[in-house]
Length: 298
Image 1: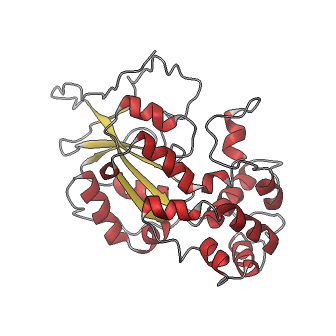
Image 2: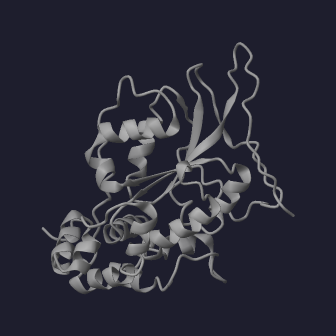
């Protein structure tokens, strides 16, 4: 059964109820690439409505009936007359099997934002978060070794729970070229996409804010929020990453980086992964930097 494209419409607004606004844009990726910073800014814009939760995790819920999807709760309350648009800030969507297809069935004209970070640094940041959250989570070397995906998975593997894929894809989540290739097949209109580099997001707030408002076609920030500090991952008590771990990751990402650059137009030459592959950064130096950042070395 095919699902017809659907866009929710704002409810009529009586005197005491301004109704709701449909979700018309989404921050779809990637995890641990300053997506919380981007959401922090947008949710403080006078024209952007906010829902009960930042990350809705609507289109990555495999257990829903996607043959007959229920969009009735997929909107945000309109709290002021100035609010014009509403968004979804779930950075798993770009990676998650089927998420963008489901989103396209909901709205083929959705505006999409994605931020990308050096894939080795991103993988380590996710590992650090998951190691702190989940008792018995494997050491870094084991965690990257257990991710044996050669490409971005198109389904949750047989016998796995969705949570298994979320925790066991440290490497696959960094295959940005493969993810964009799949995403552009679903949403081919590049004007619907805003692709950002993590480095720019965290170092140039003013340019970021103007880029976001221009893309979403809303007014400039009148009173820009103060620069948002990066969400620091918790210190962990674990074995530090080694140079061999870092080199192994760089080699895993090597085939994907040129495709990512071609599709995104983002220059990755300043990324640590590219510098290791180019021979201008010692893997041991990056391993030490990551270990110190996580409190594993003093």
